[in-house]
Image (cartoon, rainbow, N blue to C red; front, side, top):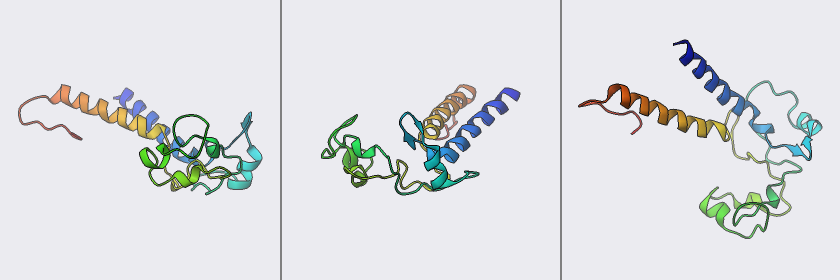
Length: 140
């Protein structure tokens, strides 16, 4: 049981850390984080915070909207295939925050991927331990 509690604590820490760091994640000034801008925009972060709408220095405006990497903002992958309705935030000259639209406490990437992996593992474990007639699998 101690191992299970440690795993649960680690996952909880991952989710909380992801959500607390969200507004300042990717606020980079090559080659490192621009601490002056972070402090000017957010002060000291002591809890969940909503990101600002804009971020001077954002490189979203350099990204290709038609595929991966840097390139033109004339493609349709961003806005049509992924990130539906958000293409206007990839426009050249725009300085939009990477997490525009997320609320305070909203997670980014790690939480979703880890959560999906944890759910799949939990379902697999449940099936192995409880497989039998009349049993139902949660989440299926």
